[in-house]
Length: 334
Image 1: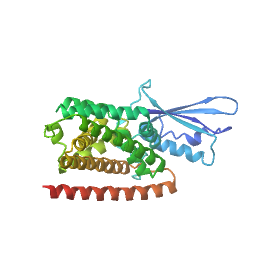
Image 2: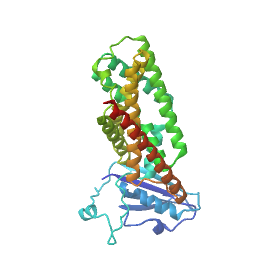
Image 3: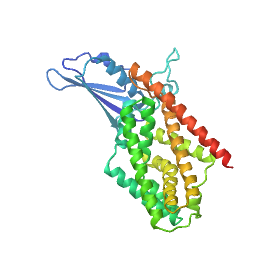
Image 4: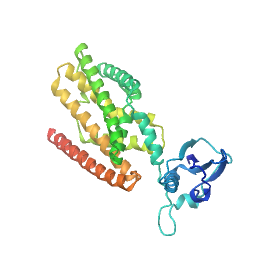
């Protein structure tokens, strides 16, 4: 079980610690006096209850900006805390209501983690460029090992999960940042791939390229699985490195194949690779939004929640409509 340390720096003169510390939700807490007018409250809690605890704390400080809440991961605690079997098996009270466990990290922690991997930077562009060059070499030389190596360094997961979260929350700023990273990343990858297709002769019928010029319903399943896995890697606090490779499996090789084929003048095959790329993008983002919605991730305030739910509803409809259109194209191809 993962634990989190919540440090609360309440407003000046605040002393009602018992108001914001619910003993049923926490493992342990302590209070430190920082000076004559300020105190610091530390709470050790299960990661699955941090969202409920944070919401309860913020409700006590509503209307005030003179406070700070800091959330920290806990590697270990001594003595070791073991969750009781009865508590693990029954997470509802006598009325059948949930005890606040969300089976994931808190919304606030999730947002900060995704925001950190969405930011557009020169490092992101360099990694995109390097991964595309390696992938192009792997495709041209028909080397699966090179293609896999390209997937390892491709930073494609973050912006796509960021777009899914922004759509779920109705967060326009996060959406703009995610779209910016996706647009420039894919544009750079396509430009480099087209240039390599112009400069280096290759056989478009080799397996690593030819296998990415045809789309089937199995590719829809792969794209949906990649999207769900990518989002779960963040919401469960799992390392996104390995899951990022799975998303890169879906997005990077067909995108690079599209550029190579366009650059070499194989336009019909390039259309097939482009269709495969579009299929994966739609599936990854649709699966991401649905995963976040089903996990109960939503904005905090009522107004934001109303707007966010409406926004995500329209987004899901659009993604599904695009997926249906692609499915029809795939169906009539056979």
